[in-house]
Image (tube, rainbow, N blue to C red; front, side, top):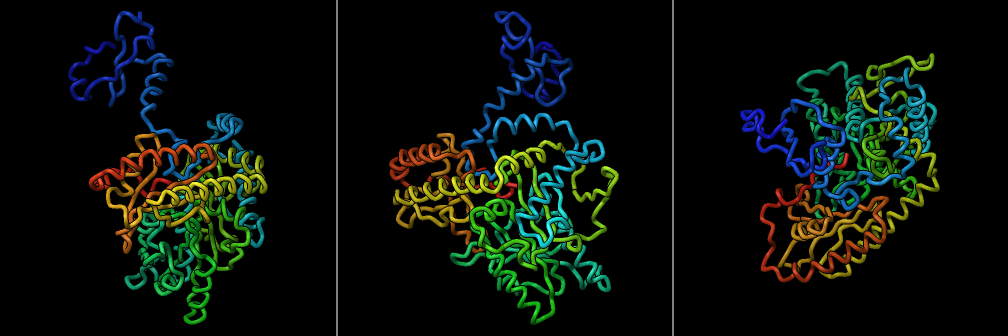
Length: 476
């Protein structure tokens, strides 16, 4: 197809994509031979080499994933894991009878996580893989609502019985989506002073007979800190003793549920607490698997209402399924099982400890520069946040983010939610693959930028929303 073909369509589509003549079959000296449109299907096929090169070249404008310190998502795996995923990418997870071993690997991963999170009987724990923590949270929320509705069947649905879910204002946006999609009132505990996540007593005070559950976050996306899950359960135990309200807890462990078991084994946050009904995590975060895979687990069959479970025949037996998505590749589940086998407990402990060490070390060096004040230091998740000290007036964290991006680093800057919208921070997420050497390079670039930032007459970023690409929905 020549650039002159379909002239009227070209006006609608805008400029055509330009192709290097070397990519096509034409004589390289003869000029362009292909110019496929951008926003409609081309009339004729392209050679596979040409199509590949077109897409490849445009994707070079994306940021470097290894330098993306905004995302929690895994950006590096071993070549063997990549090969295994390639072998399984054509397998549909929903076809459990056609791919029984993929289903079996999913079952084994659920059992491993149930054991890791101290389920009373890992063999009877119920769970499933998902496309990520957002889907897992939706499933957990649905289970909470159905359990509450079953207990309140004599008055729900009615105008007086509107279900609500209690959470901190720092929750990931998927919880707000859940409340909107499933008609649940979101009751949020605000931030106060230097407390950047849920307060257990304040959460209990928001509960009533219509509360379906309370969400605790093991690893807040705003600052990387763990919420006090055990204290939350104590507050709800006290509430139950005083009022008779028996309210379950869901732990959103999108990141922390794959960190705390290895680095903080004495921290009690999981199924050891009888009030914890369900837990989710993202296998594609600190589970160390490429996106997208998540996991949702319930402590036992009683925690997951039977009406939400669909059953298929699997190897002559009964295979329960519970998911929002239908077709999805089995590659990520196979990669998760590979990683569990590859690392084991000791390997996960070593990898996560190395990541925490990088976070702590880099945080200390950033603080030593004198211009920055740390909010968190990588002591919970391998994540730290910092803001400028009160003495710094020439620039702010949005300037820091903007200037680091010029060097290829994606370091988000953002403001906190109510009641701490006055606080703006930069956040650095350290993951496996972000080595000490890369941390040194980030520190060196920051040192080089500081003299220029200090010479500014004032902070230069006026439109903060436009300047930072970070949103608290990016990591699920």
